[in-house]
Image 1: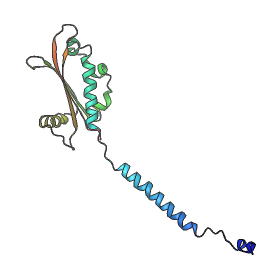
Image 2 (image 1 turned 90 degrees about the vertical axis):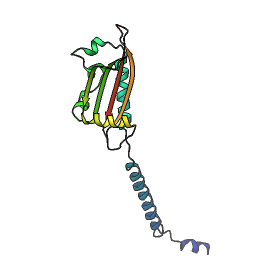
Image 3 (image 1 turned 30 degrees about the vertical axis):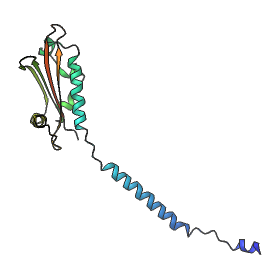
Image 4 (image 1 turned 180 degrees about the vertical axis):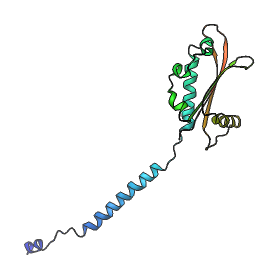
Length: 166
């Protein structure tokens, strides 16, 4: 009799296929929702890029500073600081404004401008108003005092860097 009950049992997959498809739908929906959440998050690194560029220029120019070298006609900021020239000049994504000033009077001795000129107005507005506009290029500035290695004279160095690479 027990043999007969075991023989009449059917191991059918027709009841399991509904659950299998339901599991596939749930897993697929989770993958789609996870991908949409990940891809829709805005990551804005413009301010961080501008700050890194400003800090890199500050470090580069403050080490072994020489007014004679800085004022020379052959001074190349790209070669001195190891910057790639193409992104700064060809793509209009970055802006640099390096101003060397006399320490007491604040009179500009030399100014180096690289990049898109409209960024200057955007940076001036944001830095003067201490307000960040999302549609503008993001700006960072460094003000520091540097000493000429040869003469021992002190100078003010103002570096403004901007990034608009989204």
